[in-house]
Every structure is written in C-alpha cells, then in structure tokens.
Image (tube, rainbow, N blue to C red; front, side, top):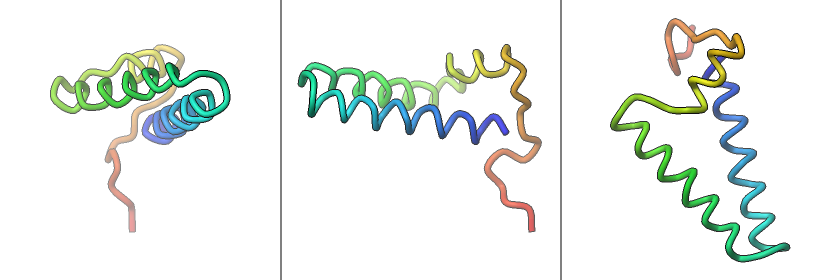
Length: 70
C-alpha cells in the first residue's frame, strides 16, 4: 500500500509542478527538479522523507514491494 500512495503523491506533484510551470511561472520547474533529485537521492540512501511521513500516518509497508503476486 505504501508504494501505491508514494507513486500517486509523487506523480501528482510532478504533474502539478508542470502545470504551474506552464500557467503560472517558469520557476516552478525547480519543484520538478527537487522531486527528481529527491528520488535519485533516495535510490542511493534508501531513505525518503515522504515514505517516513506516510509510515507515521499509518500507511502499511508491503511485504513484497513492487512484486506482483500471481
């Protein structure tokens, strides 16, 4: 469940930042850059602030991660 919430939130933030960049101000692109850098950082450190927040809010981690159960 955590993986699903994470993907929905990050995807929404990326799309929102693109819309804000196009319709409000080009400087909103820095928000997209921040999201990308955070994702790359979390791949190396295995730590992500969003994941920590979601766990504290009570979202359960999956036992198998991204694996699909047949």
